[in-house]
Length: 112
Length: 114
Image (cartoon, rainbow over all chains, first blue to last red; front, side, top):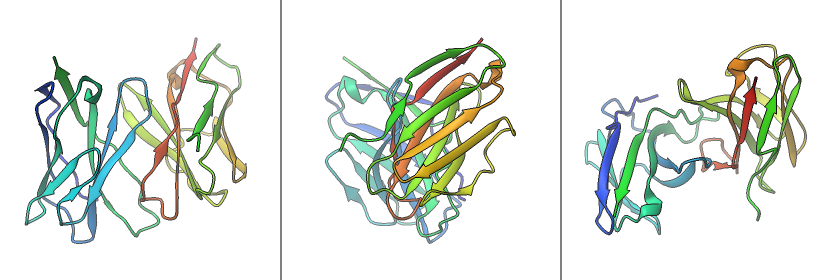
């Protein structure tokens, strides 16, 4: 599986956009980019995933570069409740033998 | 749907005792996963089931750990005998269809072994 690199921590002002980067320079053509987050004392929560097109849902937007070697998760209007550890995971979606492997993630602190 | 349900939420036990953690997956999901999270090792996959059958248990740390899924709505993770280094938060997750589709996590069980 492609390895991901994320900054260990980031700060964001409440109400501003939070842009969380992820590098996955060894990603393969059939590997998807997944984002999960874990709020303190809770289980991880799925946010969004994509293959090569940009994706948007009610929680966030995912921007994947054209060469697919990096991506950015965007929380358009961060709130204090978005303070969490955000995990970027690269996985083959159709291979039944491959699971989610969580790295260190980015600890996002949203400040008032 | 109530989501993935885990019990107990907190467990404190003494070294050498048997510990049983329980999980009820989301109805209709056919994959179930057990994870362990510690400060040192982060979030690790222990074992996963497909249609109640264990598929990959390579993450189970030792023979002291065992997991079962007797039916589609219930799974257990047992540690016997427990040791202080087993102290961690144990999460159960379930997903529909393929295992790499969206996984829904339970609230976790915080285990402390004294």
